[in-house]
View (tube, rainbow, N blue to C red):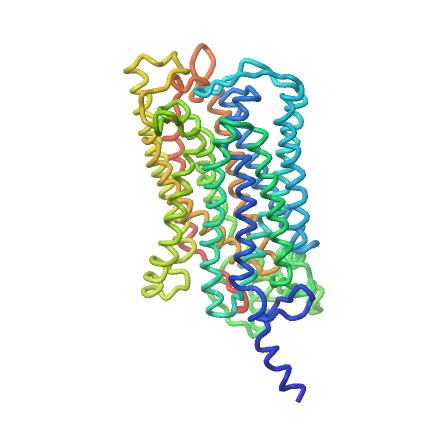
Length: 569
C-alpha cells in the first residue's frame, strides 16, 4: 500500500531538484513559468538599476566629474569590463559554496548598499556648496569636483559591480533551473526562457532609457541614482516572497565539479608518456562506444588510466569526467572568437552617445531627447524582435529542422556577430556624413554648436545593434549555460559575461593605444574632446575589419564543434 501512495510522488518529482524544505521537488507544485516569471521580474529590476548607472556614466564623468571624452570612455569600459568579469567569482561562490539562491539574496543586499553610496556621492556637491555648470550640448565642465566625491563615486560603482557579479550569473542559471531538461516540454520551455529572460533584461534597460536618463540629465543625478536603489529593494522583496515556489538544484555527485574537471587535466598530464594503445584498451574495458566527441582532445583520454596501472577510483577518472573536461575545453575557442563582438558592443554606451550629443536632438520645439536615450531604439528593437523570433520564427524553423530551438545556438550567435559587423559599417558611414556637414557649415572649431543633422540618422545603427543583441546575446547565454555540467551552470553563464568583460578591457586598451598613436605633435586624435575634429569613422571601420576577422575565426571553430549532452556518454 505504501508503494502505491509513493509512486505518484516519485513520478511527479523532478530529478536533481528539491523544494525549499529540502524535499524532492514536485513538477506540478514548483518551478515552471510561475517561478521563472518571478525571477525574470527580479532581473528586470536589477537591469533597471545597473543600466541606470551604466548607460549615462560617460555623461556623468564628462559632466559633474569633468573628465575628457577619451578618459571617460576608458573608465566606462574598464568598469563595465570589471563588472562583466566578476561574475566568474560570483558564479564560483554560488555553485561551490553558498548555492545560487543565497548568493542572489546576499548580492542584492550589497547592491542596495552600493547604490545608496552612489546616491550619496551625487548629493555631496550640494552639501559642500560646489557650483559646477554643465553645458547640455557638449557636457564640458569648468569646475573641479571634490576629491571625496571622486573616491565615493568610484568606490560605490565598484561595489555595484561586485554585487552584480554574484547576482547576474546566479539569477539567470537559477531561473533556467526552474525547467527540467529531461522533460521534452520543459526543455522547449527552457529554450524559450532565454528569449524571455533577455526580453526582461531589455525591458528594464528600456525603462532606464525612458525614465532615468531624462531625470539624470534634466532634474537630478542624485534622484537618478536613488531610484535604482529603490528598485533593488523591491527586487529583493519579490525574490523572498517567491521562496516557496522555486526548485533548488542539488549536486549530481559528491565530488566538487571544479575538482572533477581539474583532476582530469592533472591525471592526463601524469600519464603523458602512456601509449595510445593502453588508452584504447582502457576505453574498451569500460565498454564505451566511441563517438565523434571522444575523438577530440584525445590526450585527455589518458586520465582514464591510473598511475602504475592502479584501478582504484581515487586514481583513475571516469569516462563521464573526461567527457565533461572535453566539453569545457571545447568552449575556449568559441569564447575567444566572440571577444571582438564584445569590443563592438562597448561602443553603444560611449561613442554612440557622444555622437548623438553633438546632433540635433529636437523631438518637439520644447523637448530634446537625451543623448543616452538613443539606446531606446536598441531596446525597442530587441523587445519587438524577441516575441517574433520566439513565437513565429522558432516554430517555423522547428518544423524544418526538428530542433527544439529552431536553429542551433551557434548558428544564432554567428548571425548576430555578422550583424554587429554591419552595424559598425553603418556607424562609420553616418559619422562620415556628420563630419561632412560640420565642414560645410564651418563648425569644426565650434563644438558647442549643434550640428544641423538630425539625430535620427543614428537610428539604423542602433536598430541593427538591437537585432544582433537579440541573436548573439541570447544565443551566448543559452550556449554557455547548456554546454557545461549542471553543477557549473552559473559558471557557464559567467563565461558568457566574461566575454563582455574582457571585451570591455580590450576596448579600453584599443582606445588608449589609438589615442596615444594619433595624438601629439599638434594633431587631433581619433577621440578628440572636440568630436568635430575627431575621427570616430576611422575607429568604426577598424572595428568592422576586426569583426570580419573574428567572424572568420568563429566559423572555422564552429564547423567542428560537438555539442555536449549529459547522459549520452
